Image (tube, one colour):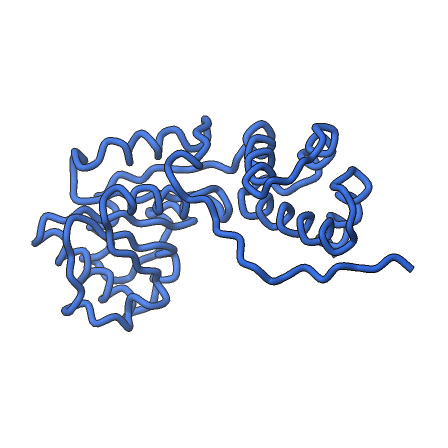
Length: 226
């Protein structure tokens, strides 16, 4: 019987730097807007697109550059916003969850107003275009809809391929080109799916002491689907 090596549960740090972000047609407009900061024409920007399209990576790149504070909708309503130090910028991610949530909407409006008072920039990320959010609070709705809204699309196959190659290289994994060619058309078009698969293949290769081949990729992808 072949001995299996138990993979250690060591976290792999996501590469979220500017140099790690691959620019393509699907995200070029958003990148251009973030590069324009701090010379935005208004107080903020909304970036929207499907899950796994890279919104969080974009927000992290901008946050590193701007020194922004970061919130997500789940904890914003509970935060002591009066005690939060707002400098140049603030990121609020996943604001889709605010629609219809009275406490959340009030918290976001309060944060928006504080940013405006202090001349701070506000970056919002969401899956739904802002006009489709269904925000109940009129003052918040008017403010959000006044922001430029930039769409980020799902990555195409060429970008998924580039992301896979880079993520394997980040882990110092040698993967033949034919394996990448096999994976790309069979993988969900999202950065999140690419990351999950690279992690699963890394663990499987280590556990079973195997090279990453088409056969291993086929097995792992079948397990991932199930």
